[in-house]
View 1 (cartoon, one colour):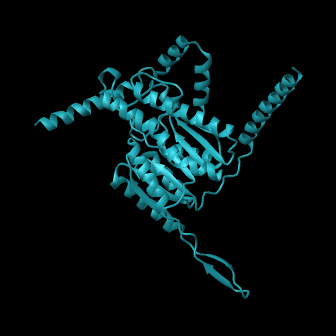
View 2: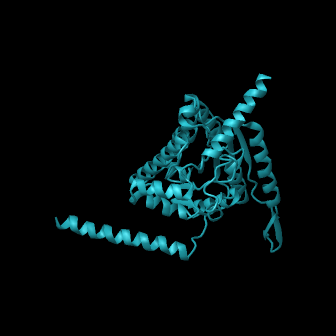
Length: 340
C-alpha cells in the first residue's frame, strides 16, 4: 500500500513538472532541430498545405520525397523545391590544408516525385518500396493527403464516403506500416499527422470528413502511446489540427458574419509555419489558432445542449451549408454541360 501511495505522489510531481516545462516553452522558445539531409516523405504534396510543407522543408535542406495522385501538380511542386535548392546553393569556405581558404561545394539535397494513390494500400506499399530502393530510409513522414466529398450524408454516394475514410484515415495506417519498422530499428524518426479541428469537434453536413479526421487523430494518439510504451524516445509524433484553412477545400464555408472578422479562415502559409515550428521543436500537438484548444476543452466539460447553443450563436451549426450548396450547384452545372 505504501508503495502505491509513494508512486502516486511521484506521478503528481511528474504531472506538475510537465505543466512547468510546457509553460516554460511559452516563455523561452525551444531551439529548432536541423532536418538537413534527412529524407522527408510528404503525401498530397501537389497542392495546398502539402506544397507549402515541401517548400518549408526544402528551405531547411531536407531531401524531399513528394507523393501525389496528380503527376503534373506534383512536378510543379518539385520545380518550386528545385528553385529553392538553387537559391540556397551558395559555396561555403573552410581553412585549406596549407593555411589558405578553399571553397567547399554545399550539400546538394534532391527532390523525388512519385505518383501514388494513398487510397490504395497496394500503391502505398509499392511506392514505399521504390522510395527505400531509390532514395533510402525515411526520417520524416508527413501524412497530409486529404479529400472532402462535399455532400450531405443522405445525398452522398457510398463510394465517396469510403474514399474519404480511406484517404483521410486508413492511408495513415499504410504509410506508417511502410516506414515505421526502420524508424523503430534505428530509434529515429518523426511522424506528422495533418488532421483538422473537425477531428476534435464536429459540425453538421460533413459527417464523413469529421469521422475520418476523428479516426486519424485516434490513430495518431494510440500510436504515440505505443511508442512511449516501447520506450522509443527517438521517434517523435506531431499532431496538426488547424481551423478552417483558406485553400479552397471548403470554399463557401461561413460562420456568423459578425463573428467572422474575429475568427477568419487561416492563411495556408501561416498554418504551415506554425506547424513547422511545432515539428522542428518536437511539439506533440499544435492547434491553430490557439482558441481551438479552448473549444476542445469546453466540448469535453459542457453539456451537449450548451455546445449546441454556442454553435448557434457563432453560426457554426450550419457553417458548412453554403459550401455544400456550392458543391451541389457546381455538380449540377457539370452534369448539365455533359448532357448538352
